Length: 230
Ligand SMILES: O=C(CO)[C@H](O)[C@H](O)COP(=O)(O)O
Ligand SMILES: [Fe+2]
Image (cartoon, rainbow, N blue to C red; front, side, top):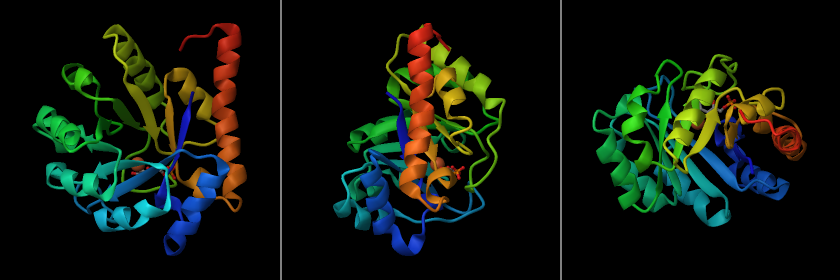
């Protein structure tokens, strides 16, 4: 079953509670929270204070995407703020194995994120430690960018690697996801689709969420009928 994770990055920051209530009413179960530090990526968003302020107002699963240098310094704060999932970028972690364990010890589910230019090579040695791999399908830092088509092959290769290792690891895709490419990323092997602009950038968020969910689920239905395996 595919999960659509609306990204708060594209929401109206002056109306965060209403925006969250709206996508929850539309049927969302996850919320993607982009944390940017102005160093690892050339943009700033918000910190654990905002995450913890929003926590009492929703039951959505908080999927925190850390685009920060030295993420180990912030894991505890986001865990206490109410994150369920924490993704760290492999590019920011020389001691990735240790950081993954730090996320789990803080009570969260660990995920590793890969920039578009980062290969899958090093992943083999941490795959059994993580619950999800986040494949960036744009260069991180900004919403509203175009999906990079060559990332489909990376998702396929990752799906093969996970299958070969016999692991239960989710594949999340993030960046430029829309109803036009949702089926393709699902066919390639993604189970969690992050979408900012395609939901919060639309006038009718409920219709946009449902359209995206429909596009992604239809790929699964067709594949179940035809026996397609990505
Ligand atoms: O991590 C991100 C950017 O670094 C965002 O999650 C992503 O860009 C979502 O926005 P959009 O769907 O508009 O591309
Ligand atoms: Fe993100």
